[in-house]
Amino acid sequence: MNLSRRHFLYAGSALAAAGLPLRRAAFAASEKFPTRPVEMIVPWGPGGGADQLARQIGKLAEPMFGQGVPVVNVPGGTGATGMAKLLATPPDGYSAAIYIADAHALLAGSNPRWQLSDITPAAVMIQAPSFIFVAQDSRFKTWADFEKEARASPNKLKVATLGFGSVDDFTLSYLAGKGVNVIQVPFSKPSERYVSILGGHADALYEQAGDVGSFLAGKQMRPLLVFGKERFPAFKDVPCSYELGYQVALPQFRAVVLRAGTPEGALSVFDSVMGKVAATEEYKKFLTEQIADPNSYLTASQSGAFLEQQLSEMKALAKPA
Image 1 (tube, rainbow, N blue to C red):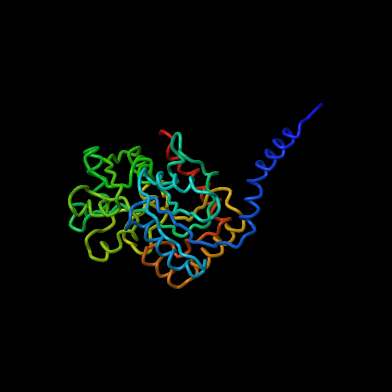
Image 2: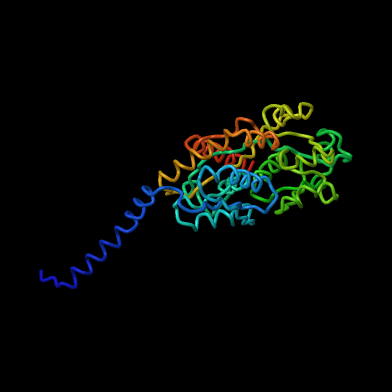
C-alpha cells in the first residue's frame, strides 16, 4: 500500500476529533465544580410550588456552591418545554431543573419527549399528598356530598387541574373509572388555578396543601379529600382515598435533576449541597410551611429508585380500565 502524507494527516485529524468528547468529559470531571453560576430551570410559571422550591434552594445553595443560582421559568406543555431546555444544554452540571410528579407522569403516556434514562436525579426535596379542595363557602360540605353529585350528574362538576397527562389527570381518570365523573379544567398558570374555585370558574381544585397554604390560612378554601393510604396529620378530619375504597395515592414530589451524562464530580457536589440544604433549619421550616412530609429528602442514589417506582405506578394507572 502506498499511503501519502495527506492520508496520514487526514487519519490523524479524525482520531483527534474522535478523542475530543472523551477529553472534554475527563476535563469536566476533574475541574473544580462549579466555577460559574448554576442555572435552575423551573418548567412552570412564577408563584407555583416548583418556583417556590427553586428559589428556596437557590437562596440556601448559593453560599454552598460559591456561585449564583439564577432561576429561569420556562412554562408550557405540563413541564415538557422546560425539560426540553434542560436536555438541550451540555451535560456539565451547570443547568439543573425542578422535576415534579406531573412532568414525570408524561413518561407514562404514549410517545414521551424524553425518557427516564435522559436525566439524572440529584435529590428529591419535597413529597406531599394531593387533595381535592373547594371554596370555604362551597355547597359541598363533605366529600360524600361532592361524590354523590358527581355520580348523579356525570361530567357536570368542574375540577381545576394542572393539565392532561399529569398526576391530576391520572387520578381523576381513576375516579371516573369508579363512577365519579367530573370535567377536568386545565390551568397552566398556578395563580389562575388556585383562584378558580374562588371565582366560580371551577367547583373543586386538585392541588397540594402547601401550594394553597395562604388560602387555607385565610379561610378561603378547605379540603374534602386527601389522596393517600392514611389521613394527613394536618387535616385529621379529612378522609383519605384508601379508606373510601379508592386505591390511588400518587404523591406530588419535587426533585432536582440534571442531564444524564453529567460528570460524577458535578453530581457528587450537587448531591452534597442538596443534602446540606435539606438539613438547614430554614429548609425544614419551608417544608412545614409547604405542609409536606418532614422526611421528604432523598439522596441522589435513593432518588433514582424512587422515580422508577413512581413511574411504574403511573403506568399502571394510565392503562385503560
